[in-house]
Amino acid sequence: MKGETPELTPHEVQVLLDRGDIQILDVRTPAEFKGGHIDGAVSVPIGKLEDAADELPLDPTMPVVAVCLTAHRSIGAVRLLKRKGYDVVQLQGGMRAWRKADLPEKTGKPTN
Image (tube, helix red, strand yellow):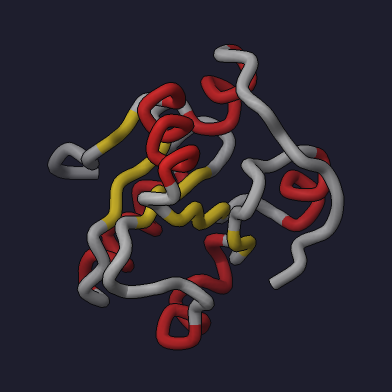
């Protein structure tokens, strides 16, 4: 994939979450999401994102962080949301990096 995708580190994302300054879009599968996700994340698997993009429960005026397991699937989400006018970056290293940084996770099904 050409070009660099803007990223934030797990700790940068946690600081912004604590301040209420970002939204999280998790593009992993429902099973991955159920196994552990960032609190408050909106779950839309990458394969369904294009069809759901115009109806996302996200505030288009607030920055978004796209999340997947290793920061590969989230690249496509960042590109798609940028085309839709969102201010969007990806979580550097994905959920693996989040877990390595020992940051908090929720488990269970998506509520959105």
